[in-house]
Image (cartoon, rainbow, N blue to C red; front, side, top):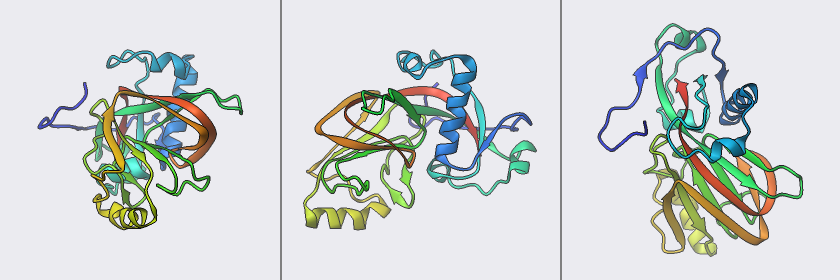
Length: 228
């Protein structure tokens, strides 16, 4: 069940001995993809199920690093700690992106953030930047200061900035003070379609995926549990 304002979140959980452990967001996404593959589920099938638990995926995975881990307070637990019951388990939302790319790739998933930019080096707001974020952080940048990774929605920031505004935003993003901004559209979405005729370069959890002119992103609630 997705979290509501004021509700407690997370429980003391012992990570099972056979449960995998990820140290980065990309590794965590790969483990969830492996769980999908093992169950014979396609990403497109999961994204069509918008009710909690209807997607058929619910792995329990240990997490010791990355931006989602930072969003959860960067607890300093070792793998042995997690397997001995010292950790906390948190249900998590999952982002699924579907696109029509020249590479032939049709979909992928992300646990922390999807960054799509006009700039091929993924420099934010140098041209259009579309940010869909489940975690609060990308590195030390506090991109979604009011976001929550289990509220059933993704935080969306979409827009471009001129040179001076971009400089100011990049100075403020570490404190989460880059928003609100009149040139940046903000919303919280369960699903969104994005199009850009010139194409956007897409990174999922820090890994370059492809360049696409159109893509759709869905948020799957309660898709997996991390133990940190």
